[in-house]
Picture 1: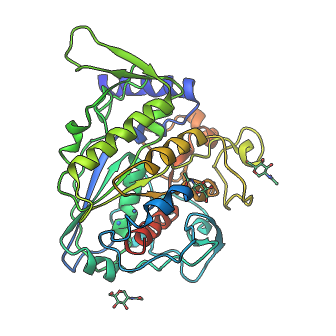
Picture 2 (picture 1 turned 180 degrees about the vertical axis):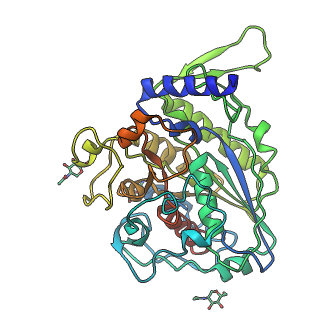
Picture 3 (picture 1 turned 90 degrees about the vertical axis):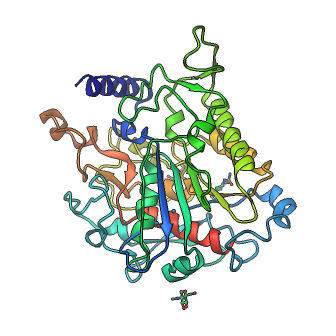
Length: 400
Ligand SMILES: *[C@@H]1O[C@H](CO)[C@@H](O)[C@H](O)[C@H]1NC(C)=O
Ligand SMILES: *[C@@H]1O[C@H](CO)[C@@H](O)[C@H](O)[C@H]1NC(C)=O
Ligand SMILES: *[C@@H]1O[C@H](CO)[C@@H](O)[C@H](O)[C@H]1NC(C)=O
């Protein structure tokens, strides 16, 4: 009881400060998911990525030539993340919602009454080439006995669930769930996130990182956690110290610190000759329809088609954070494959779970009367957008 009270008060203060939906609460739970690829008898299971920024690519290309697991190449000069959504009734969706037992009820939109299925029928078409088709047999054969791990927030969990759903009849899935994030904080607790008084401990990545040792492929993400609208408090010592040495950083600087910690950890603990590291960029939200020229006061609720404006960016995704990511990774000595899903997902105002999901707590009559007030414009229906993230992960893993 005490726990749920605390959780709801922290979420409402967050809403006041950052105007984000209560679903952020779910998002704040950091999780690790492991996929072990072996066996032949499992049903539905599996990820996503972005190119290395143009300039540094030339310099690092040679160095990265022999990436583990690569079996081919994406055509020279083709940026898989630059493209458009095309309607494809014949090859999409890649699986059915009802066929995949791994989808948690927060993402099963059809089961929860979503009236349209259009969001399932869009295919990502890069401008410069075609995406290789997702081949589960190939994935199974190439990665037999390997461990792939998703480390991050609930959006990374969605990507993991999508990955679990894609291979169909070919793999056996084993999974484990924990609450691990890049850095230790006083918000590590799965229920009480203490958003307003959150403190992150500098240099604490090993506390969670010990759980990731020995994996063959790791897919990281982190974004909304840092976007509370507040500066982030960073603790220099330990949480037990009597006098706490705390500095405040802007979200950008704090994010940069987390990225650098992650890279340092990767350099120390992973071997570039036989492991691969992916980083998924920010997953956008669609809270305010005025961002895409809709009526004021609305959100992703009742949207049924993607944004038809190639230059649309939206207000939730900070370009400054994207610049931090691009900057940190371009200087990385360990090859990190960037899954730049932000822009392509920005177009998908139609793909969120909205009101068609299992609710964490019963709705009030006021909420029911006003669906916009409780529509989840953070997470994504499955099948749907996150399958594309995994098609991109597949492409970058095998055809870098
Ligand atoms: C990510 O992809 C978008 C769309 O192609 C592009 O505009 C942006 O520059 C890319 N970001 C980075 C950091 O590479
Ligand atoms: C999938 O990969 C397997 C193993 O490499 C190959 O034999 C098969 O032809 C591929 N399927 C398609 C549809 O490309
Ligand atoms: C497309 O989106 C951009 C950036 O969000 C905006 O400035 C522009 O007005 C939009 N164009 C149309 C035709 O709505």
